[in-house]
Image (cartoon, rainbow, N blue to C red; front, side):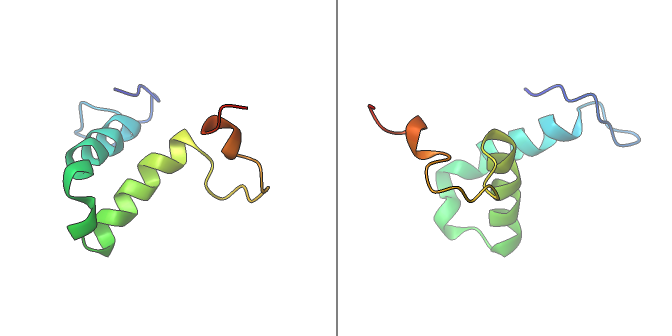
Amino acid sequence: RKDDKIYVQDQKLSVGSIIKSKVVDFRSYFQSLNVSGKSIVSLGLNSLLDLSFSHPLSRITLFTRQ
């Protein structure tokens, strides 16, 4: 659960928590999601890694043994 302290009226969970929980729900059938579903997953991942940051080595160090 992500507590970003940003809430939409009449919602008990924060915006970040709503996005993260939906991403977890979608993970097992990502390949069959429509564009809208894949966009939600992208939003969730973008809060973990800045996918718009285009430096060639920006994320690779997270996934290598170097």
